[in-house]
Image 1: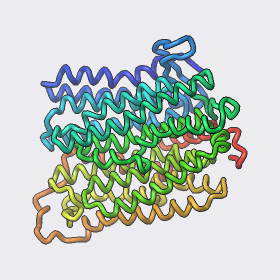
Image 2 (image 1 turned 90 degrees about the horizontal axis):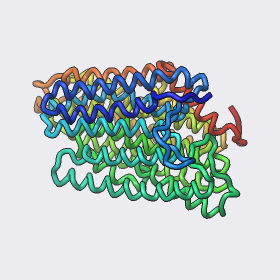
Image 3 (image 1 turned 90 degrees about the vertical axis):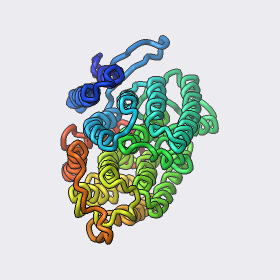
Length: 501
């Protein structure tokens, strides 16, 4: 049942309004920060208020205006979009508090512009999640690029400018290819509305045309998701402040890229057509290569944030791999890994930021003994790191278990080997940080004068770390995200012939 309801529009627009208010009250930091936090709570409340009805099969829809007779600028709450919307809107709350503590503790300049861009980025992220068609999706997808660009070059130095230019080149070029693909979809299918199972069929065009179309559209998602060799912008973007890194890696940009891949595969082409075209297998190989290669590179990084950046490159390819396998459980795992990775990686980045702000040290080799001075921060880091490796009772295990089941459904045990190797490599590049922090003495005594970061930073870290455990034990804790992911995967693969639920 579809109901016309303004809440999807309000959920998108509230942070855009907040961005305007932030700019108007820039000279009053407390008022400015209030708008950021208030928008986060309102946005989350609006999204979560729609979850029970969506779980019951209701779809909320709102058209802002008609572009043509057949194309509207429309927002819609299907289960797939609600998974991304719920996790993005909720994490906006702790990230907002964390950003306030970080920016003040680090005495960053241009804070008004920072928080305004931050708000617009979350407006775009929710718009992407709730888009009902490719045109609406494209508008918010490009808005996300424009909103996060000032955040990447926030430092305004030469390194930041280079990173900003690199980010724009990667994302905007592939964005225009995506637009060309949208036009082709409309010409072939006569519609660009998302439809579970796909809107394209094999009789609409020659096979090579559909294969080319898939390439045009998947590049946009692969770039923002950091699939190799299109990942170059992501490590460079680590020059940005840590809250931006958390936003890029956990809440908005890379998740939007992964979600784009899921939308294109599940709602434009569909599993059956992609199985005929054979292109999904190629994408799965790229994802598997990225998972292993990025993990090997991460092990060589001494800079804390760069190590986490390469971890993101690999972990987001889990989502791409799950989508490309085209199996019911792998797609379920892909959707739930959006949630899992968001919680785990935002915890890791916020821990890194807390250490950097407190000690002004950015390299792992300089962090001997920091765990004794910042035990809560490093304990939360350890929990999230174990989750990234897929340890039981932490949320990462749930998503990776479903990915493995998906590989078994299509009789491809090779990808299970990839998952196991990745888990071991994750332990290899993440757990040494915990070992150095807790079990190595600092001969210089550099950390004796330090203590935990301020509460604006520490409390969000504890909240997200606790949720990684809560959802690892009970995946439907809170807004039933596991059920939403299951509904999305089942709708996409309802006609799948390789197995069943």
